[in-house]
Structure formats: C-alpha cells, structure tokens
Image 1: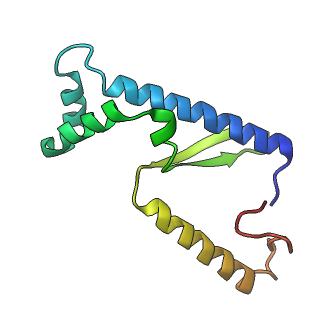
Image 2 (image 1 turned 90 degrees about the horizontal axis):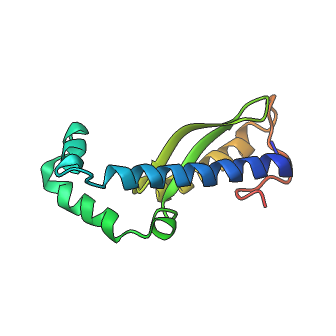
Image 3 (image 1 turned 120 degrees about the vertical axis):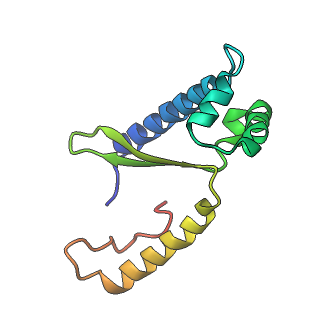
Length: 130
C-alpha cells in the first residue's frame, strides 16, 4: 500500500498534534500544583516509590521536543474516510530498536512467502519505502 501525499500529510499532522498532546499531558502529570500531587499520580499507577525521584528528575531535565522524539512511536490507523486514529503509543522503551529487526524479518518473510497472496507487496517496496 502506498499513501498519497495528502494522506502522508494527514499522518504527519496527526503525529505532530499527538506529540504536542503527550508533552502537554506529561508536563501536567509531573507538575505539583499542590504539594504531593505527582506522588499521588505515580502511586495510582502502581509505580514503585523507589523510581519516583528518577522519573521526576527525568522530566525536569528533559527538553521534550529533543529527548522525547528519539524513542517514540505512534501506531496509527487510517480510516476509509481518511481520518487518522491512534491505536497505541510506544515511547522510551528498549524494544523500539528490536522492533526494527522484527519489521525487517516480517518484510523478508512476506516477500518470500506471500507475494502470491491476495495482498502482495508492490515490486518496488522496500523497508523504508522512500
């Protein structure tokens, strides 16, 4: 499947909006408007108290548009009407590097074993679809 320029633009716009929303949420989450609010939020998420200080420090030292963009992936779906829907966010996880390998293995397997299926990959498809 290849996206049109309009669909690619819609995905890019949605990704930028989602990134801004995530940063806004995290800034709210890690800001104590009243003493102890952040601790209550971390406790509600069942995060071990041993990690609280490191998490708080991580947000305080972060330049969101630089640091968060390094390991952040949105799984999006494009509806039949062209709407972009968020399925899942994967951020700051050690598996992001491994996912590249999984995607490559899927690509190789699909090229070798599924080209005669109802949904073959285009002959010029490659891993990065440039």
